[in-house]
Length: 122
Image (cartoon, rainbow, N blue to C red):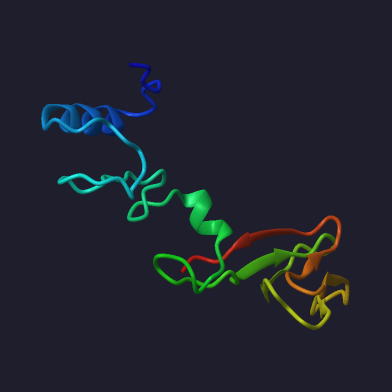
């Protein structure tokens, strides 16, 4: 009898279980048998990776968290630190030298060249 190649251990276990009970291995859930059809998940839904969670929409994550944050931006001219929202909708300028620190876009604010930033601690 030609049997398909073993893909993962749970399929091999299911095949051995079905053969032990006298029913041939059949991968279709509609086959008539006394044993329940066993399925295995390809992804672990309870323990998603950090990359998968970051890629998801903020309300669809396992634990909801916002994409926005506050950051400290250092001016490239006078080196004064200013607190800026990551998704700022207005132009932010330095208090001392009136240099433009960031410009709004459709989502996150774009920092001007030469400005450095670090996210604020939560």
